[in-house]
Image 1 (cartoon, rainbow, N blue to C red):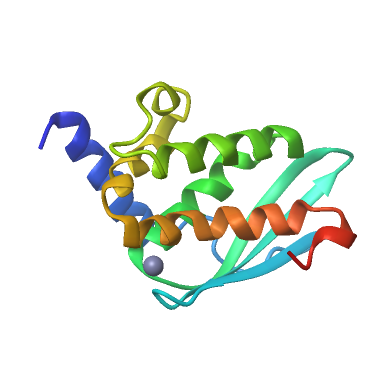
Image 2: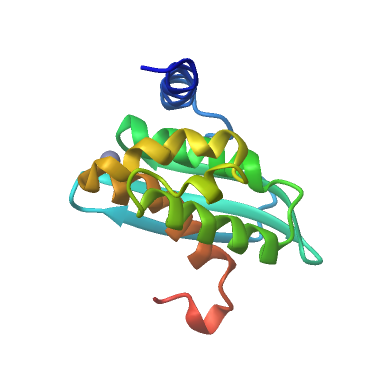
Length: 148
Ligand code: ZN
């Protein structure tokens, strides 16, 4: 494993074991729950939006280490972003984890989230990594679209 690979591996383990932003989010304005029946992961993502800015984010639920780490890093990454920026980040993340061995160009733009590039090699795990992002998209969607 390369040094970068080892660093990413440690990051994933760390976030998987000690997730950030885990728990209820007082004053949250948007919520959505999504589950991944293939693995048994189930998360509710909470966001507090003020104007168009995501001022805070958190999540609750249970899942494997990959989905836990993804939710932890996602909530940390989107704080301070506009919903449009968060959607853009979500698209890039999707592209990276669904393009083995991780879209190299996109990887450079993702910061710590690039730790998930290796997930692209394990199709079963891709849905685990994407789950929190799907919940986020549902939470931020206009009320009429939330059922999707
Ligand atoms: Zn999982």
